[in-house]
Image (cartoon, rainbow, N blue to C red; front, top):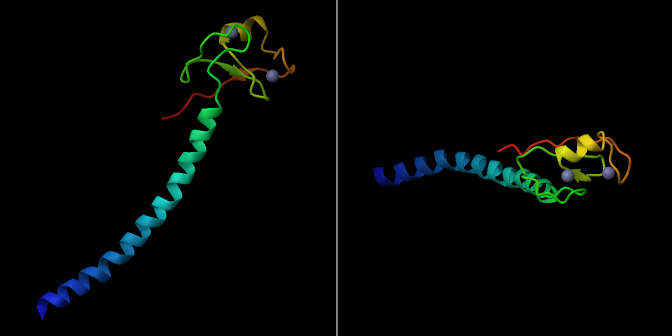
Length: 95
Ligand SMILES: [Zn+2]
Ligand SMILES: [Zn+2]
């Protein structure tokens, strides 16, 4: 009999914890997926000189996400040749 009582108490105590953990797990993958989508859209090549751009390296983008290396941004005087938008430093991937 004592054994059955122990199992019952354990079950009652554990269940709320599991439910909370599952809710947190359900919420987190959506956030991570959004971040991955943004990273995938990041271009890895300068549109002007075709230089490879490292994801964590310095680069600039305009408001339409035209992507250039820093050297081209300087010679373009921070103005996008495609759309005339201002080129700003691309935020680096935060891990
Ligand atoms: Zn370039
Ligand atoms: Zn542009």
